[in-house]
Length: 124
Image 1: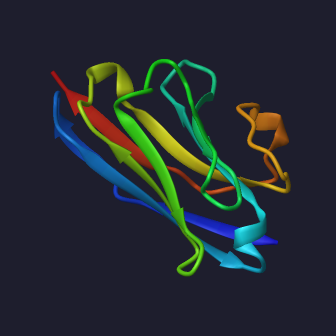
Image 2: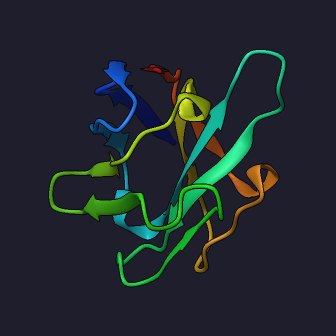
Image 3: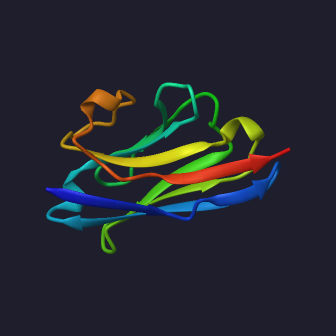
C-alpha cells in the first residue's frame, strides 16, 4: 500500500512556473513507476508525465513536452513535476499516481494508487 499526498499547486500567471511535489508513504516507493495526471472541469483525466522506478526513463504528453519535467527522489520518497512556461490550458487538478510496473505507462488504468490532487490555475 502506498499513500500519496500532492502539494505545490496554486495560482500563477501565464508564462510562470510551479513545482508540484508528491510525498509517498508506505513501503517500497522506489519499486513503483510514477505518473502525473490532470483533470480540468468537464474533461476526462489525462496523462501528463511518467517516470520509471529508477528515474532513468521518462515520458511526456505532447502538450507538455519541453515545458514540464518529472523527477523523483527515492531516498526521500518524493515525486516532482517542474512546470515552466505555464499556459491557461494547463489549468486543472493535478494528481500523482503509483503503478506496480517495471516500465512506464501513460494509461491511467495501469496505476494502482492515487493522491487527492492539487489545484493549478494559470491566469491569462
